[in-house]
Length: 255
Image (cartoon, rainbow, N blue to C red; front, side, top):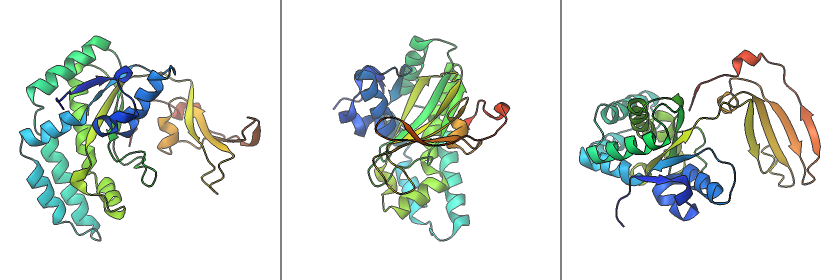
């Protein structure tokens, strides 16, 4: 299959999971279903693999990971930091950077965007990888987008991501990274909805955590969100409203 470094959301569905990861595949499927998804595009796993191959990073990354003792947190953190530094110190191959800049400029030269990690091992039935890689909000300008795409690639090798893959027996070099570049929404309220009750696995209820501002404040634990439990009605069955300062609910970076 010919490498494509950029795919717009309207070109993507769940069959593209291997090229765009779990998050982008879901965004594409929702876009094609007519759901109001903020526009954007995926930097495909072809770009990530080309970056790694272009600079010959694969053998060195594999060597450092093979030397890690997963029970020694200091060595895991040191090796993870060194791998990320290697990736972040190198330029993108010219053809990838050109495609990325062109795709961003088609959205708008100074458009604020979210740059979101979308690994191929995310959103799996037995391994969600929630919060294991990085997302950056309110990124403005092509230079910053290029930098944050590279940072997302590097976040595949945070100590928490390495530990998570080790725990779930997922090969470090088997996971590839796509990146979503998506128009920012200056949300009045946002949150997370789960299609089962995480406390007991009850699939007859939807559980919603929500707060003022961006969803980042909820998923990162910056605020205590309002919590709702809704049955298939949908009528709220349980509601707990939190007390918090609305000034907490602002811009940020999600991990």
